[in-house]
Structures are given as structure tokens and as C-alpha cells.
Length: 347
Image (tube, rainbow, N blue to C red; front, top):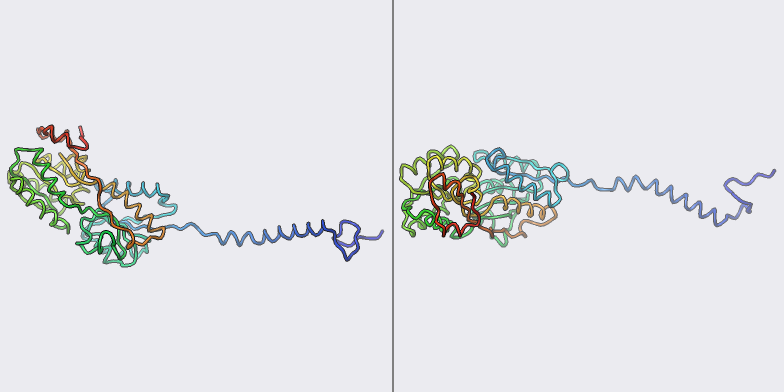
């Protein structure tokens, strides 16, 4: 029997090929090409970017430091960033004595963005790098501190959130006087290590004088000074205390509220959440909300925005909170007119 030429499936002259055979060969050739190209396509796919975020902030083990970090992380998750998946967060505590070292350490890790809380850590971060984007949180006056050129056009590598608001201290002093009408002498507690403290103090003393109050200025540089500070107020026969807004006072807010209660000194605190910690009253902004908002700046920067082009934001919401449980423990009756002005009353 006459054998067919190899590869032919029907009787055709050797010089000609059927359209079906041509189509089948084209199909098989295309499949082979696709199989050979597949590994190249796979290797060309980019591995998801693992962003590295440096965080220089309050100690996680402090009264509310962990809660601030949780607020920040939660908002990052809502924006699609999950620690251990597409981001990794390098935490460093903002202890004053080690600020420069820890800021420099985060820079050496080549983080993609650096989040810093309060003025001193922000200054340390600025000294450590002029290129890595920095998101500041709860800085009182970044312009006066030399961190940025202006709120609308920060310039450089820093943006974020400031807590600078005029006349807030005067408002706090006025509410304190209304809540405790018999008060004629008030203690003013501040932290001289805070670069913004003196600015607030310069507002507190004239505000007290305008209300007919004598001001006794007392300082605390760390939580170990709280007991001594309130003891000095008791010896000075104050009727109440204004605790100026300060990151350290906030982080150790529960401890401060307990010491103030033990010395039976009713206090007006400069940060909204401190009434939740046990303070008698608070009028101000919420650090937790600012930490949540910081995630917005991080997101924008990781997506390519430049800090110089992101205006620095100021607080837009201030709340007056009264803790009636603390008032009862101190034997105080808050006037109804003051209660009606409160945004929140803690029973």
C-alpha cells in the first residue's frame, strides 16, 4: 500500500495543504506561543507594594496612647491599608530624652512616610530628614515653631494637623468660672517642656485677670510631677484648676484625673477626652479624631501627593463635656445654665 506523506490527513498533492489543516496548525502554534509566553506574563506582574510607615508618638502602654494608635490604624484599614499585608508600621515612643535618636532610627529604616505627634517630635523629625514626607498630628503652632511656611502652603516635606485656635484658653477659663462661681483663685497647670505651653500660658493669665481671678501658675514636666503640682495648688488655696492642653497631660490623663480628685481640686481640661478620663470638665478638640484624620494624609502621600501641596488642617469641632460623676464626688453642683451649654454630660 502506498503510504501517505507524514502530517497529511487526506489525499492531497504534496505541494498543497487543506484550509482545515492550515487552521489547525495555526491553532496549535498559537497555543504553544501562549504557553511559552505565560511565564513571561506572570513574571512581569508586580508584587504588591509593602509601604513602610514610621510612627513617632505616645507610648502604647500609656493610659490612652494605645487608643490613639488604634484610631489611626482603624482609619487606615478603612482606606485599604492593613498592617502586615500592604503596610508595615514601625512604632517608636516619643520620649523627650530619646527623640532625636528615634527619629533618626526611623529615617535609617527608609520609611515611606513618617507620622509624628506633638511639636517636639515633629521638630526632631524635621531635623532628621528633609526628604521623607512627614505627617504631623496635634501640633499647636507649626508656623511659629518653624515646621512649615504657612497653613495653606506648608512647603517642604511636612503637612498634617494643627491644634492652633485663638481664644480657646480664654473660653476654657470662662466656662470654669461659670461652673464654679465662688472661685476667686485658680491654678494654671502647664508643661514648660512643651514649646507651645508658653503661648497658652500667655493667654491664660490675662483671661483669669479679666474674670477677676488670681492665677497660681504651676508646672509639671512629667507624670511624676502631678502629685506635687496639685499639692502646690492646695497649699495655694485655689478653688479650681485650668489644665492647659498638652500631649503628656493627655497620655497620662487618667492618672492626672485621679490625683486631681484625691486632692479635691476641680479641673477644666484643655482636651475634650480628658473629661472621660475622670476630669470634671473639658473643652477642646479630640486627639482621637485627629489621629483618624492623619490616615487621610498618609493615604494621599502614598498615592503620590506631595506634603508641600497638602494644606495643614485646623480643628473644626470643639466640645464642652461635663463629668457629673466627678462633680458629685467633689460635692459640686454645676449650675443649670452651664449644663445646658454642654455638648455631652457624663453621668
